Image (cartoon, rainbow, N blue to C red):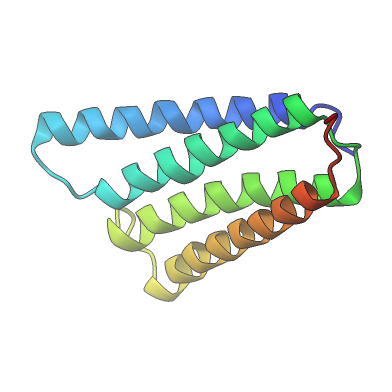
Length: 130
């Protein structure tokens, strides 16, 4: 089980926030907007979603469970896989075979969808103090 999902998600959210801000600064300085989708997904999926999930775990403190572990791991793998896959597929910096980059891109997106489903179920199962 994951001992502190809030801290784990918060660290990854901070990493994505930094990456998204650096990509935005790079695009503004270079005048090239090739990274626009990666920049947007880094901030929305990586920073915003992971941060909000970190806050959820801190505020509501649901019990550690298999569902919690699946949620946290699929969120981490999905957000990293989606943004790296998107970068490899759209920007093509390494000239990898397109089917390979597409599989990484779609696989990351599917993992992220799994994390959103798990989070939704967690919200239904979490009791509030009110």
